[in-house]
Image (cartoon, rainbow, N blue to C red; front, side, top):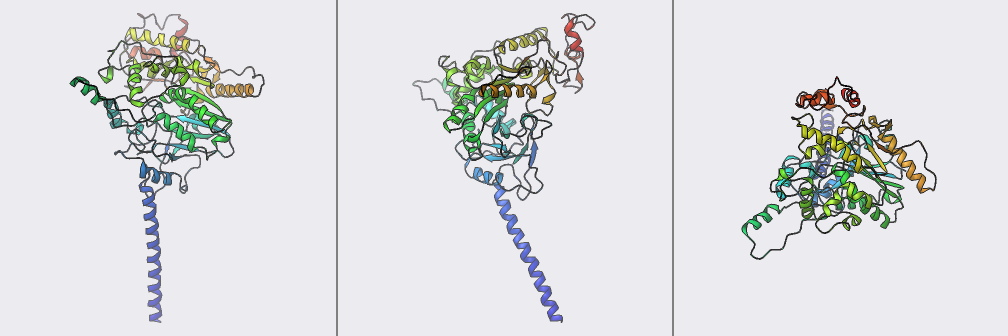
Length: 513
């Protein structure tokens, strides 16, 4: 019996050892698979981040190439869902074409949340301005690497606002196929490849040589190509059978919509798709700067957006829509980055969402609401900006333009709360959608469903649904008048006496939030 007991004990030990050995091997394979995956932790469930404006996850620390990491990343991103992973999350897919990359050579890609059976697709381009020289790109890579590299992208994202899969947050688009395309090309989605090396010039002076050397860069700029490749990779997912493809984006992503919508429509048509391609531009409708700056833009901080685009276009091998390009002589193509110059040349339907007092437009003029003092000249500029933006939107068929101080709206969870003349943004988009469908089917569009909505009141924050203003020093919410006083303006001198009977003041005293 003792011998039999010892044999049984040894067999039990052997079974435990074998099971542990198998688990160790499986764990090793799992670690190996996810080890090359950008943003994944070996042997653990893929990380999930909530998608908020400008968010693309953490930043990696090293630059890489698209080759092996792309393959490993695709394997990890397209693998089976980890236990407990929410099915509402968008999943990361790296591009099959490994030659089209982020700035630093890491694989570009997209996040996808499929809705089986839906023939509507919503593609969203992330924003984040640009870089246009070695100095600005090096600084960008050091400080916001996530906008130049995929090395830290998480494997899943959770959409918010118009990207949300929840009906209560996104009534009309929650049941569409949703695609989020992270911004990692720093070229306002216009780049088509590595920057060309300028030919050597005879008897070139040392100063010119230094200038060329300073502008030389090791980065690649492929924003427009990334969009093209995403469309290709979505073919197996069913985009060729789409009824509607909405190309949307915020800030630089919104400008990217303006620059690429005709190209996307042409690409889908060539693939045999019958989809109507539409554009949705959020806070990407900019006005040229009014500040006088050095024409040579020698210092990065002195460059106006126009100068940055002029310089950047050469660096990025940037492209603009053909019909707009034909309006301007060589070297003036940068004007096609401005919606009010480009809009009339577009043939695809377009909806423009634009705060009339856009904070990024103000920052271009060194005006920071809630962050510094404000001069009377700057206050006058703020008022003029609202009028100028209104005028630029006059001929836009579909527009939602509240008289508010803010920037971007589409991916905010409370995007449904903002209204113009009693109509919310989701409602206006739905009305536009119904009108386009009626036109396609030779029907008369329904009445009482507006989608050209521009605030008529003249002051910032005069719309009672505006986002609240926040004092950067105290983080307290303030009314516009309180903010102006905090920033050092003399209200009586400017004719803004709160005790007066000026009509706009009643709305300015109430909090916009």
